[in-house]
Image (cartoon, rainbow, N blue to C red; front, top):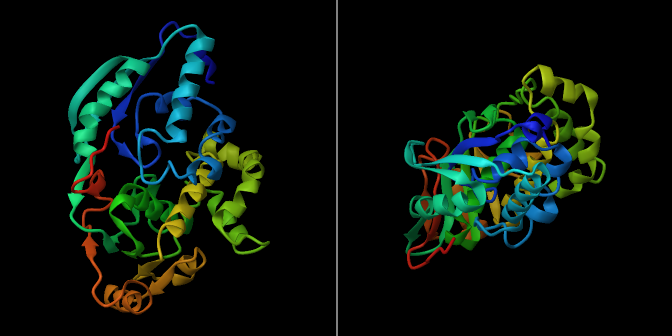
Amino acid sequence: MNKYVYDSDVAILIGHTQGNPYGGYSGGYKHCATGITHWRSIASHHVPEVMHRKDFVPVSGHSMMRTKFDEIGQHMEKCMGKKFFCCDAVLDTKSRQIEINSGYAKEMQPISWKTADKRTYVPFAEKKYDVLVFGMPQFFHYGDGMGTNPIMLMQALSAQVIRFKRIMSDKCVIICSSACNGYFHDELWPYLREMYDMFQKDGMNTLPDMNRLGEYFATNEEYIRKYRYANAFHPFHGFSMISCGHIAEQNTSAIYLVGAEQPGYARGMGLKTRASFEEALEDAKKKFVGPNPNILALPMTYKLASVHLMMKDEVYNG
């Protein structure tokens, strides 16, 4: 872990509690378990053997990933001989503060979740949906290029599946618009173009096949220098993205990307490409969902902080 934190008199974690597909919420012990540890520690939970378990989808606060966050954070406290003082703001859909809780993370985290659950786990659907429709901008969440870099794009699609799995039918398809214009943003993610190219060959049939290369990328000295000195992401971050990115394929009949300027990048990730929503829907009706599918349009996706949708009669006990 970070030596400055280890040696400090008081270690303070400041952040927020907001719905997150990786372990239910941001905040709490997720601060330290991902923020001030080594990539090898992060590789104990941001990997297929954790993210492809049945307890990861749909999203919840009791997955193995979340358990690992808590275990790692509390082990750090034990080794430091002191507890983290955690200050988390529960945020609403526009990322405004609803409530602020401070104190020992182990005690404070579940208190934050009580309020956050009311905003985040929404009993909404009276029926399961066969088609999810939304758009994907170029710039959101992890940065400019999130919606056009093919690997980041797959992570974004899967994040919605993790959040909405409770209301998706077994034959559900996604129809998503994206410019998909070939913009990788190589300065921010200098390793992803190489990862994409490697995924196209050498027996890489699904994204988890790439995971064996995690250490190769994570120890690449040039990628590490760019992380340290040129504001790039650390190269292991790409393996969190592909572990998540496979979840969309696992839980949908098909994913259509519409309006792509360079559709080959989408096809290289296993997506179907069409010029318009209408064409994609007609194809989905013929092949997957039948003539009268239940369609859910989500126009504010990636513009506002998402919720975790549930069936109307469903009760979430976080």
